[in-house]
Image 1 (cartoon, rainbow, N blue to C red):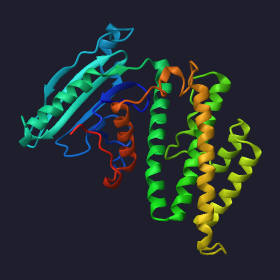
Image 2 (image 1 turned 180 degrees about the horizontal axis):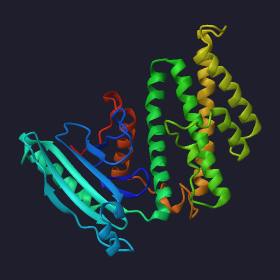
Image 3 (image 1 turned 90 degrees about the vertical axis):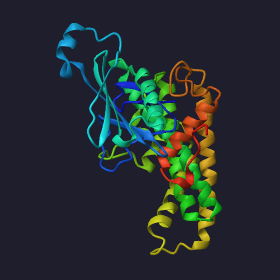
Image 4 (image 1 turned 60 degrees about the vertical axis):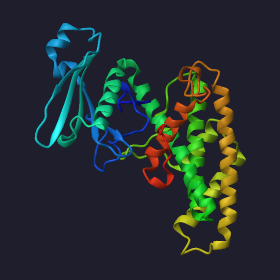
Length: 332
């Protein structure tokens, strides 16, 4: 199983490692209730879960439990028609009303795979934990941190593919992305070390569709400001940035030659490795602290087991969503 946190940090659940979170995958689907999940391969049904403030859905229950519903109990029901079977689950915990759904084709009722998925749905529902309001922002930020890590891991597939095919423009583009990512994470750790806090300056790790994000050169400036890099590193990164822009945006209208691309790509790969090592040193510096993304609380430095590796593979698969780079996450 792998953890999944509601985007606003309201609740946490454990879902099967081989199941995909659908909301950010389906074009136009927002990250709001209901949240949908199904197996990566050969999905027979779809599981959804929603949450609502208790006082909106069940005001009498909210009045009865002014300090929150102490124990989560699920009440199952069915809402079937000639086309689909709909398994419904109603529950309440703390300050939230919860609705779970599992839907499948009516012709598959009592199919063994459907029954197995329903057993997994039961495990998911039993795993629900409502996060206290004061901790919800941190929970939401840590979920974004995990997605950031999965995307960074996925980028190595693109880099390896580009190197194997001598696609130097792609090497430059992906390496530039990785440098930006390593610096962003380094800045987050540097700020946490300075302030001795768990608080995640999420603007460095996540950019919503309608947000104006931090550009690369701003990241270079902030990395210098927080002593992540030195002056000579800052100059090199800005020099590479100008070269990258010529390659990506002005290859046809400038004097840059194709023979220049391997040299520029090599400089980028070397700079990327240098920045990665800077990040590694900051991670090691934070690992013994009681605070921060790599501190003892979040156990990011615990020895990875098979399940942890499969969870990372699942995060990588979620970023790619193409068969070419798909990792195996099942026990089959």
